Picture 1 (cartoon, one colour):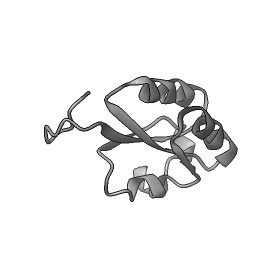
Picture 2 (cartoon, one colour):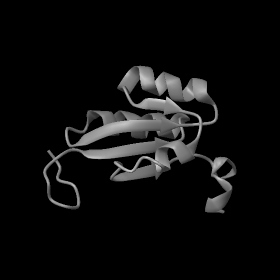
Picture 3 (spheres, helix red, strand yellow):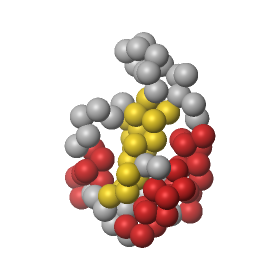
Picture 4 (cartoon, helix red, strand yellow):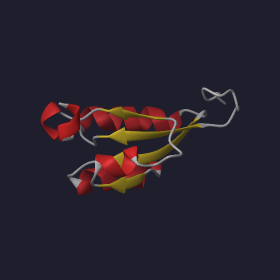
Length: 90
């Protein structure tokens, strides 16, 4: 199991922003890694996020802010097109 930054040895709790083609590749990698708790997948196109939720168990939401507001997350990755990034990222 991968240790988090604090060295606790618990799985890293991670979120994914985006659920398109490359995000599906990243989601599969996150879900397969024994040291990762793949917690969230966010996309305004919620049906795409729900498809990944069904495959990998991460909770699907429409808003990236819902992922970013999870105080228990160790990290997140964005694999969405730039036009779908929240305004605060540009």
